[in-house]
Every structure is written in C-alpha cells, then in structure tokens.
Image 1 (spheres, rainbow, N blue to C red):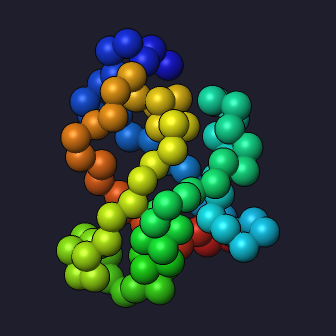
Image 2 (cartoon, one colour; image 1 turned 180 degrees about the vertical axis):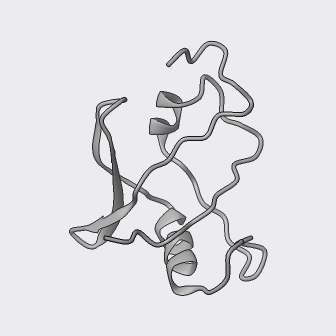
Length: 91
C-alpha cells in the first residue's frame, strides 16, 4: 500500500470484534492485531450494532470519536470525512 498518494476511492474492510470488553480489529496487511478502538469509537460501534436499518449517521445521537494513530497505517494524512457502513457477519 502506497501511503504517499492514497486513492480517494479506496475501500478498506475490517471486521471489528469484542475482546476483553472492548471493540478491536485485526489487519494482517498492516501488522495490526487486536487494535483497540478508543475515545468514543466503541460507543459509536455499539450504536451501529444495536441500531436497525442500512445506513447510519451519528447526528442523532450526536457523537464524536477519536481514531488513534493506527489511522496512519491507512492514510498519510487524516481524511476530512470517513464514511462507514456496518453489516452483520454471517457465519
């Protein structure tokens, strides 16, 4: 992955899961294992998991979250907007 010129049309898929009471994810392509979501992001994921429908926008309830420096494994600079779609994993 070339982080110096990221594509504006990149789609990255992760599969968050709960470990030791917090939301985490693995990404073998970047070496991340059990990377925790922190500072408001777990609560946002809880809203997505507990909600209904297909598209989510966290205007109501209004929520903000911080994404840790692991973001720089995907982007050379923080994107102005991140769009999220959450779907259940069927096993």
